[in-house]
Structure formats: structure tokens, C-alpha cells
Amino acid sequence: MFRKMKTKGQSTVEYILLATAVIGAMIFFTTGPNSALTGRLGNTLNSTADSIGSISNRLVNSQGATANGVTPAPGVTVDPTAGF
Image (tube, rainbow, N blue to C red):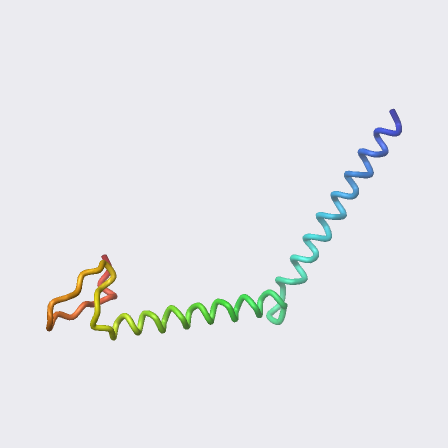
């Protein structure tokens, strides 16, 4: 009986240590302006925003089909910021 309790207590301590290590790693990688994750995430978000801006500029300046597949009549301008 005492042996079962010891094993159960030991596994509980191991889970607590594992959870502490995971939380510590998360804090280490996500805190501070110069952390590894913050820098990479910022670069990814900036790159994505630049790509979206570039694509939207190309769509605004294009004379082809609109988003729903309908080509506007000659002389008709399409305002992509007008919404749906």
C-alpha cells in the first residue's frame, strides 16, 4: 500500500516539474522586446502585411476582372474599398 502512494506522489511531482519547465520556456521565449519568438513573429507579421499591401495595390491598379469574376464595362471604375 505504501509503495503505491510513493509511485503516485512521484508521478505528481514529475508532472509539476514538467509543467514548470514548459511554463518557464514559454516565458523565456516570449518576454522582452528582443526575445527569439518576438523578433521572428514581428518579421513574419511585417512580411505578411507588406505582401497583402502589395497585392491590394495591384488589385486597385488592375483593369481585369473583379473579385467576383465579373469584368466591369469600359469606363467603369471599381472601388475595392466600397465593401460588399
